Image 1 (cartoon, rainbow, N blue to C red):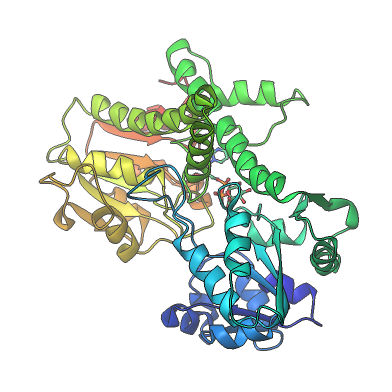
Image 2 (image 1 turned 180 degrees about the vertical axis):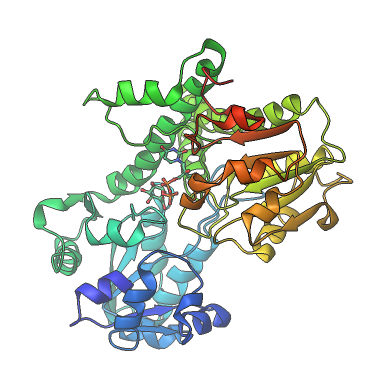
Amino acid sequence: MAVFAKNCPHIEFEVVDINKERIRAWNSKDLSNLPVFEPGLSEIIKIVRDRNLIFSTDLNNSIRKADMIFISVNTPIKKTGLGAGETSDLRWVESCARQISEIAENHTIVVEKSTLPVKTAQTIKDILLSSESGIKTKSFSVLSNPEFLAEGTAISDLEAPDRVLIGGDDKHAMKALNDIYLNWIPQEKLIFTNLWSSELSKLTANAFLAQRISSINSISAICEVTGADVNEVANAIGKDSRIGSKFLQSGPGFGGSCFKKDILNLVYLSKYFGLNEVANYWRSVVEINTWQQTRVYEVIVKKLYGNLANKKIAILGFAFKKNTNDTRESPSIAICKNLLNEGAFLSIHDVKVTKEIIENTLFESPSTLDKNVYLNKSNLEFQPNFYDAIKNSDAVVLLTEWEVYKNIDWECVSKNVRKPFWIFDTRSLIKDKNIHNLGLNIWQLGNGSLN
Ligand code: UGA
C-alpha cells in the first residue's frame, strides 16, 4: 500500500489492523525500526505516511468509508481438523468478510490480496451477501488480485512487476482496480482472468518456482557424488532460453511463508478432487526440500566425526534469504534444531534477525524434537559480529546468502578456530580457492570437484 500511495497521490489509503502494537510501530517516528525490514520501504513511508497513507486501528470507520478493500490477512496452514497440515486456515479471512459485510456502506469492491485456496472468493461472496442489515443499500463485488512480490525486492517488484493479475466477473470492479494500477503500470502488463484462474495462478506460480529449486537441489546431490559442479550445470542449462537462468541457485532448501504452504494447498485441492497422482507429484517438491535440509545437517555431523558434543558451531544467517528479517520456514530452523539435538553449542549471527526472534523461532514454535535435552537457551548464543561467532569454533555453516559473508577474511578466521576446522557453505558464497592452504576444510553444497 505504501507503493500504491506513492504512485496514486490522489487516492487515500488506510492500512488497518486490530493489532494496536503493530499499528503503533508503523506510526513510529523512528523509521529505522519499522515492523518489516524491506529495502527502500522506509524511504517511501517517509513520503506518504500521513499524506495519503494512514495506519490505524479504527477498522469500522475505514470499512465504512472505503470504496475498495484489500483483504491482506494471514492464511497459514491449518494446524488441526480436516485438511490439517495442508490447507489454509481461513479464520482471519472469514472474520474480515463478516466485519465488512456488517459495516460497509453503499457499493464496496472487496479484493483478495492474501494467497488463498481456490474457490475462497465464493466463501467471501457468500458471507458478504448474507449480510442482513441494510441489504438494500449495500452491495459488493469480489476480485482476486494476488501478489507476486518477493521479500527483499518487494519495492522494485511492485514498482515494475512482470504482470498484475485481476480476476473477477464484474467488469466495472475490474476496471476500477485496473485504473488504480494504470497510475504506474502499463496496460499490457495487466491481465484479466476469471476468479478461479486468478486464485489458481497464484498457487501455480509459487509451485513452479519452488519446483525449480527442488529440481536443482536434487541435482546438487548428484553433483556432489559425481564430481560435477551444480553452478556449472545451472549455468549450462539456464542458457537454454526455454529453461531460463532464474531460480536455479541450489541451497539449503527454500524457506519463506509461501512456497510450502501454497504447494500443500495444491496437494489438498488435488486430493479433494481425487487427483492423487497430481497431489503426489507436488508433494514430492516439498519432500525434496525437507530432505535437502536434513542432508545438510547429516553432512555436518559426518564431517565432524559423528559427534557434535562439546563442539561449537557458528551459524551465519538465520533469515530464509538475504535482505529480509523474516525467518518463517527458514531452512536454518530445521538445521539448527538438528545440530542442537546432537549436543552442539551454536553461535548464531544474522544481519537483520534479532536474538529474540531467533530464540522464539527455535524454542517457541512446535518442534518434533521437543523432548530434546539440548534444546534450550544455554546451548545457544547470538553474536552481533560474525567473526566473534566463528572465534574458537569447530565449524561454520553459511546458511543465508548475506553479501557480507562473501567477504569474510578466512586467513584471519584460520588463526582463531579449533582444528580440524570445517566450513560448510550451503549457498556457494565462497569463491576463494586458497581455503585449503589456510589449513581449513571446506564442503560446498553441490560442488563435487571440491568435496
Ligand atoms: C516468493 C515468490 O518468489 C514471490 O513471487 C511470491 O509473491 C511470494 O513467494 C509470495 O507468495 O508471497 P519469497 O518467498 O519472498 O517470494 O522469496 P523467494 O525469492 O521466492 O525465495 C524463496 C526461497 O527460495 C528462499 O529461501 C530462497 O533462498 C530460495 N531460493 C530462491 C533458492 O534456494 N534458490 C533460488 O534460485 C531462488
